[in-house]
Length: 266
Image (cartoon, rainbow, N blue to C red; front, side):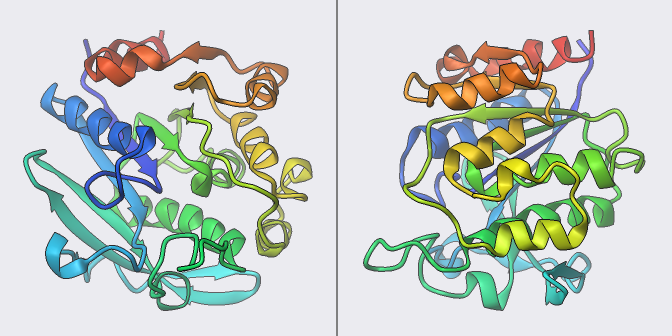
């Protein structure tokens, strides 16, 4: 079986995030694929709740310094990296003073959503793409997990489909039922409209269901990881002609993902 270059993107990764099905899978998948000889990269946001000293994060100067445009404003991108103890993998952290310095994740100390989570999601998604280009690395597979990367498939397909870093790359979205109540701020749809994203309808009202519907329409395959995934998200993938697979077995046997990835190239 061919060894692949696999890019994992998640906003929850253990040990930088509390235990959840998503955070544990976001560690187990790249760890196992790395052990099986594949070349992997892992990205997540550098939330302020992450203790940089304890987890030994340090800035990657050669990758930092890019400006990412969000709603006509240049936002400086800072890249940090840390090694996961016992996993022999590194995690790249997307950082920015305005979006990620605050002491929280996407909620504050009162468990209220931050008013710019939409913009933060867009910054995270665009920043990963720009960092991959600066790395000069071409992933065979991009595996998305979590709602904060939902804009990214559209940007890869529309703006980077012919770029050598993403040409012929297969996109996979895992659905974990990790939604949220209400809608994100309008910074996300405004930013996407400013960039000229063609497939905007699902993102205009950025509820969790709509975000996932917009994301899964632009991938090659969807994995339903847990039974609590809303039916609407699964149906959105099917309506776009994207195959939906039961991914629950990969939670207990992540090594079997290798065969699934290879099937995408058959």
